[in-house]
Image 1 (tube, one colour):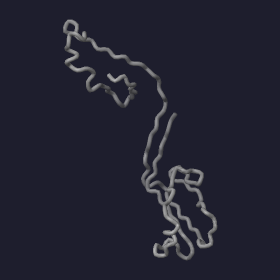
Image 2 (image 1 turned 90 degrees about the vertical axis):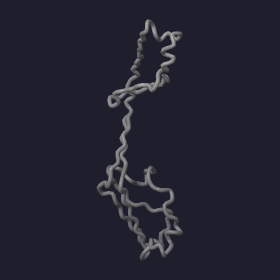
Image 3 (image 1 turned 45 degrees about the horizontal axis):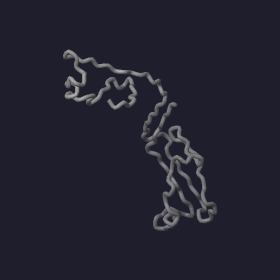
Image 4 (image 1 turned 90 degrees about the horizontal axis):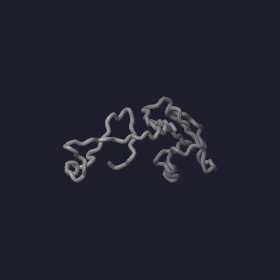
Length: 142
């Protein structure tokens, strides 16, 4: 067929080709596929070896302990460029500042945060809450 390597798996019990050769080519005596009105097919199977690599993805809906509430008081007096919440775990995932695999580079502009009509800052404090509704778990074997 196309000469591509195909990996066999116990879950896929059948393999095939939509069309190995056309019926016209098979029946044409000049091609030599038919001898005395018979043809023999063979297959070459080469064992390449198990790569041992796999990956699985699962989703956890409503994981336990999936929320964090963080209050920054004296908001108008804060001078640092950023402040860090405590680290927290959800479904064995550790959310902390050393991991850059989550989050948004820009979630809310500072000017929008300070808009009084929006109500983000109350009594010179801001309360941030996060709730994780679903989390993916990836398992990789090498």
